Image (cartoon, rainbow, N blue to C red; front, side, top):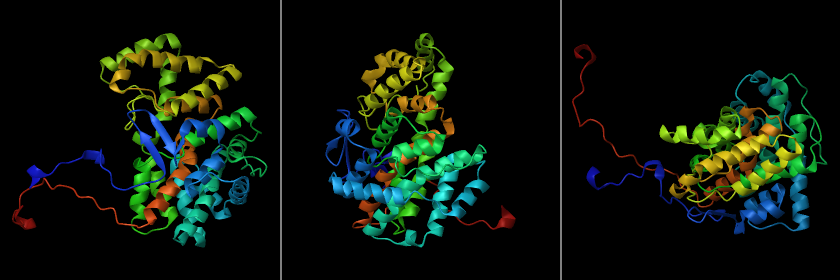
Length: 377
């Protein structure tokens, strides 16, 4: 039997379900949400509008968007016991604290136990608002600062920057954070979204699926690229050293962080929007060298593009966070802020016509053998 079974390790190339959310064409380097090009959304839309689009399937009217935005703002609050839990775990990694706080929300909010599409949407709206607040509150607490109260006049991205830094963000900084969240909002059956679907397949609540997704995103092979790119930039130091760095990496048959993607053979379509943001923000803040180092690495990697080693979205994200003075261990939690609507709609889709996800493993252990009593081993 084993000779006739094909193993697709990592489920590579396997279609396990249909989805009407995001369409990825890796060969062409294209991405769309609900049929809308990521380029149009990143250029013209807002994160709030993209959240509505992903969850409800259509772009909102002005009235629908206003109602959705009001619901998000109303949810900008954390129960006091969650803040106590953050204080008790303040020395932990931000992803561990975030996961623990979301799990605590499930235990503290009776509505979190409700299932069904309407309940998932209501709980999802609350979580979209609460996740950035948890991250900002933890960063304040671990650094001995008071937790900044949310500003109901600011957008989702603007309020995140306000609560994190304690100063009103510029329109340019707000817009760049907004675009960052849009670009990370949804990406098909990636590891964390698939893991969330597996959890929802057991008929649990939305918070359970999100906790699973957060645990999966925390792994460096999934969510850690932006942080690794920033470490690489510091290691290179100056643009003139980029070529030698790349040459040494390739000679040692080691990966150059920020290049290549599981699904894209051409450049990640999201990368161009972050590239422009790095260039503009670096110039505005008097630190153009970060962008120059990145572009020197891109140039040095050009000969390998034909092998599918093109730049991906996370190649540029870390430098944007660095320019804002954001600690490196917050890079993955920021990814989670953007991915929240994608996880939520993946959970909702899984719940429709739900089925337990139960793949098989092909046994390759010992042949049947007799049990040996312990006194004769």
